[in-house]
Length: 333
Image (cartoon, rainbow, N blue to C red):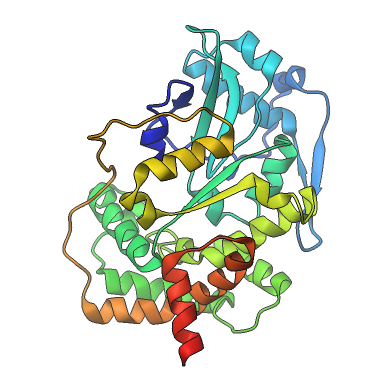
């Protein structure tokens, strides 16, 4: 919904419905020779726990340039102004062919948050000053919505991935399958160090047990954000790294969408803009409610992760209602 609202801003371009997936693409290290004229050097970046990855900034800029060309963005403007940021929701300053003025371009690829073992490092290698907007939804509701989306959109298609494996399974069966895989990867062990959790997460991302793809893993926000924060803290310093993140609660956006819209515009440096009074909500689905037993089981599963999320975010001045509630419940006990 937020991306749809942003698309109504006069100074914003969004590719509605399209997820670019540039920074988590498995072919990321394919370096086209012709990209060399768009930048001058290679970059590499330490991963947060001691590993290194070599990044070709030229290839990244070339691929983004191709996206802009495809939408008829002016090539000369792109070369002169550069590309300045990237996603889960991120923006790049460029020029449009028609109006010859600056536009903010948002790359909406939700899996960038999920692929926290590779994307933050790649992002910082390619873009020196990214702005990252993260929208967090109650993890139980997010997981169920993910499953229903998979069933509705992909169950009629063939393939070896998410599209095929959500076919013919109940939500409860899919949950049990993914929990088994998360346990096998070592992610459900209590008291993991950041380094051990990082390695377990990277292992988990390489497995093929999560189908529908990462239905539960995507809701383990604390693991993903802790890795993103570690990379940005190392890069920008402890006093500055949080200036590159805006973390919003999905449920609050439904209560006051204009407030969330304003916060996002302020964050990326765009002038405020009023949404139409009758502006509705987007990307909502209709399906049978989850059983009470399954909801209670998932609330128990996510409880320790949500408590850790509150512990991570609260000292930074970020308050997420459902994370705070489970934290408070635990303190009462």
